[in-house]
Length: 241
Image 1 (tube, one colour):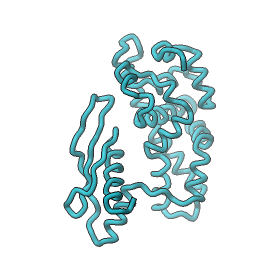
Image 2 (cartoon, one colour; image 1 turned 60 degrees about the vertical axis):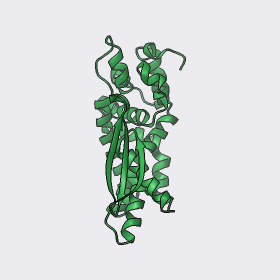
Image 3 (cartoon, helix red, strand yellow; image 1 turned 135 degrees about the vertical axis):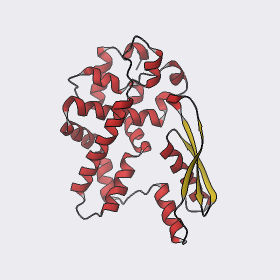
Image 4 (spheres, rainbow, N blue to C red; image 1 turned 180 degrees about the horizontal axis):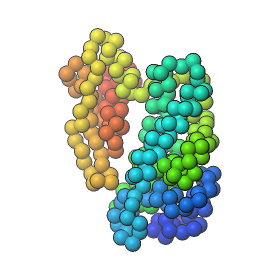
């Protein structure tokens, strides 16, 4: 987008362009604008609406999880609860949602504060995944569950089909737990050892302990992502990556 972020976030052209990317027309355009408003923008622009997209992100996270769970349940009647859970986790993890947000070019439409903009906020996985969840939450409020289901089916249909035919992608934490327990040891334990950055750009560092010893360390902009990174580091150290 060539328009400056502050102007773009308030403009009709910005909204129409984003709706074309999403393949959805919102009845309440304010919900769509709010879904792409990062807390850093709200904090730095007193004249803008005071809210950020964080509440919509919370709602959208739950709605996307429900839609994906229902789709998997109907697509794979022979799967066990564990298999369904594993597939859903793979599809709604932060990195997967961020990848989908990139395909939709949501980063181009994010309303960011100056500091977040200069810090690469348009490319940050946590911002992109959060924006996608917020858009789903906004769509749920605007048009209801069925509209979100159609949106998710359209945008994630290939990923859902692959999860059903190409095997299940295990997370590093799941793989590490299986590897550790196969050796007769207790499940890995995780602890956050450091939190840095401003409120809107936190970075967590976590350790994973195996048999009481630190086996790996990882960082991420969410606690869960840091734990996954730590598990991946432990798997690499064990020669299982």
